[in-house]
Image (cartoon, rainbow, N blue to C red; front, side, top):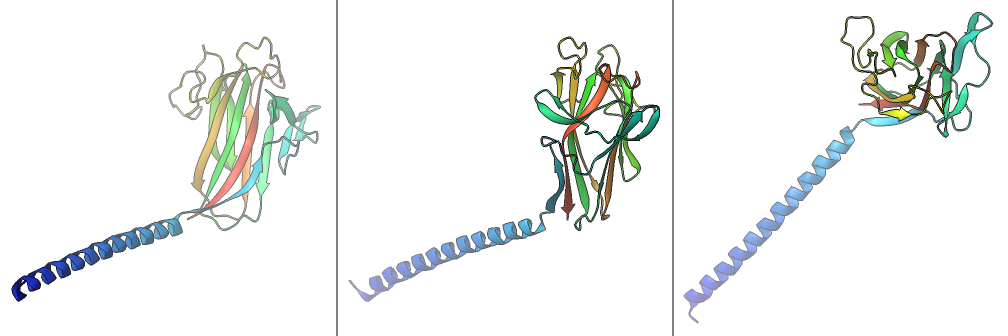
Amino acid sequence: MNNNNSFQITFVIMKFLVVSIRKKMIAFSISLLVMISFTACFKNLPKTQIVYQNDFETYNLKGIEVSGWLNGNFGTLNDIKIVTYNNTKVLGRFNNCSADLMLHKLPTHSALHVEFDLYIHDNWKNDLWKMVFDNQVRLMTGFSNDSSIQQSYPNWIGNGSALSPAGSNAYDRELPGACRLANSLHGTSLYKMDIVFLHSDSTFHLNCSDAVKPFNDFCEVSWSMDNLRITTINF
């Protein structure tokens, strides 16, 4: 083999090695960039912390106060308002009642996530239900289990919003009634309440209440809640 051929072969081998090294370096660089990007993304993910959670299975109100009518006066009801419904424990049942939860010393956060199951029992006919955050009405609406009567939810009641068919946006409309389980005409509708909103105060006040008719007839119309969870979000 002459010197010229040897030089050409050596040049080809070196070129191959350089290309291989470049490819490996490029692959390594791409992998490194991807890792950095993912790391940066994870660092920027919001931090969450559950600050309140209650499924009521232990009959523990965990700070919730219930108010209602007793002997003609509206005030705090000291008896435990946790009952069994459909093989689970729920906070309720309520008729012209109010449930309050006050949280203190919340960790630093930018938003709150409030979620719970809302059970609308029996003969609702677009009756009023209200949810308040920090003394500001978050939702004032009406629910109906009577197919002949439309409901306000998911819109507000009394502000001119269009009505929707009974049970609109319900998670489940085929649950049994709360009181007359065997022969309840309109049964129960389950709604999944899930709200994320800006919030940074160290305290949070949740209030849910109703104004249903007939008054104090818990077997005719009532509501309850379950699986309440409140989570702070820090961006």
